[in-house]
Length: 82
Image (cartoon, rainbow, N blue to C red; front, top):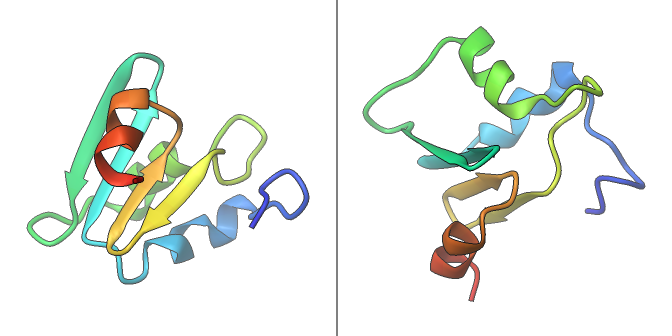
């Protein structure tokens, strides 16, 4: 899905986590990893990671199996997207 053509509003952003075990979020030069199998942050904490300033799911967002990548970090993408 192209996020520029079909946005996912903030209220629906948490739905992208269904079936996800590992969440990697790039904010600036920092990559945050959340292991959703062992810890479950609050909805507000997850929303803060997933929703950008536009109020929509941050782009780019890529799902690879049970891994969700939010934002872009070349090293993280190289590790999961082959």
